[in-house]
Image (cartoon, rainbow, N blue to C red; front, side, top):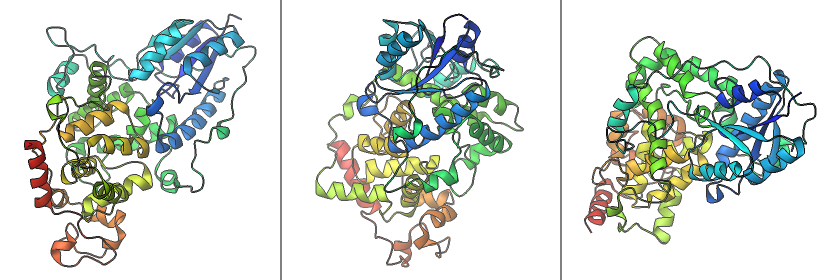
Length: 455
């Protein structure tokens, strides 16, 4: 039997349409390995919600590998050091992986390549980030021309099936026990809503896709209606690589009706990676330096407002519903994410980076590129973004997009209110005593934000 090859897994936890796995299996015995590496990302180590998802995704992947005659090796530590040690233990000299574009993973890939034969493959995005360029050969900064240029490369290749079997080595190296990693919450266990909402793993991703595709043509309207179940909810599955974007794209093409708006959302993931490839520190540095001098609020009053936002106690029902949904399930409806983010930035005048970090810890789909790009778009600080002076009116948005039932689900103290009153119970004169008054009025907040940006 030829020497074994290491398969380095990160956010690509699937067997189907997995180019690195296919290539490694074609060479002989494969040792799949996942490394819990908190050293390489440093302050970008996974948040609590992502770690919950990771535990269950690895559990699912391990079972899928056993069905193919293989197994998943788990190790902790710095990726390049762990892979070098595994190579010494097993005699492996080659490592296959899917290429990642977060700045810390690019650095890790360089470090691994100094001591091992590292073979990187593409497959986490529709096209390799940075490969779609302008006529002058420059990467795109603006989404709309990026989308038009990306379409010239679509559809992506047909997704490849999972191998029928995965060649195993004569001897397996030792593996950590998943339960010893402490990825699941304890004392308290806050993940009850997560367990009800999600089925991490490749099978769960395919089930979610099959459930969504019949509704895909309605996505252009339904994605803005929080009270409807029209979102795909594929974002965490895509983030952890339990399903490839090519698989999602081809299924959407076969759906009845026009699915262009949904396809644009899949393309947005590629666009976000394209941005962080150009601006690796996009999670902390404004894309528009002209706004670097904006005077964000800080101190006790700002801290109290931040806490009210985090816990869904702002007095704005649509914002509070979204923040409570996030805490309970690790996910928030797309339209409500924009409203909640805009509220923090412009109504409360709190730095977008603080909100981005909160989402990083609480979202099961927390993705460095998408999270950073979306927050900067809302803040008006991004290279392609809404202008800061465009301030969302949450009460108007709530009524416009018929969020009544959504509010009733996540803010139960308002469940008995009528459709006319539920979006702004304070103005309607029927705010229950158990629900807080607005922490700031919309007009007052708007004037304060405009004054700050003028200054």
